[in-house]
Amino acid sequence: MKHSQAAERYAKAALSLAYEQGSGAVFAQQVNDLLATLNGSEALVAYLHNPTVEQATKQQAVAAVAPQSHQIMHGLWSALAQNKRMDLLAEVLTAYERLDAEKNKIAQATVVSAAPLTDAVVNTLKDKLAQAVQKTIALDAQVDTSLIGGFIVKVDDLAYDASVAHQLSQLKEQLTQVNNR
Image 1: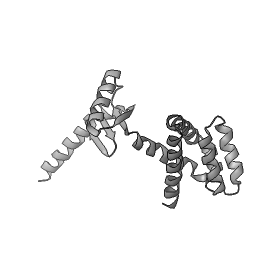
Image 2: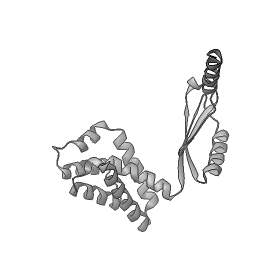
Image 3: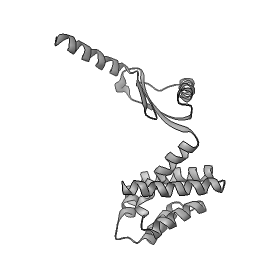
Image 4: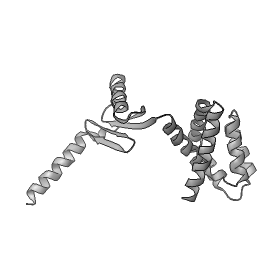
């Protein structure tokens, strides 16, 4: 919990500075890129969490994987290193993405369907979700054949399951209740 609050503070400071300098979009893309690098490298994350490695060395390692980073990013690394918090980098970047999405009224949505969706269906779904939540929708479309048919949509704290597998599960539950009477 303590780390989450600290990560939140660093993320808020970086967000404020990025938008103050008019670099919000550029910095957000660099945050996304670096977070993808961290998520794809267990070794780098383990290195950042290693207490025997000096903070300045950790900072240099991150700078080596993201050499063209914005000055705000370098300032963030520097602040984390000075405060012995380089292990929080991924958490700070994740918090930044969430805060940036909130600021720009963007909701992350996921649709899982039994078969790939056409572009027209994806666009219609994005439009309907945007109307429902009054935000721009960033949609991640996935395929899960175990759904048999239909789809599951999740956006913010809302979920809608219109899959055949879910409907069959509900029918089985209802039949079980009828047989147990």
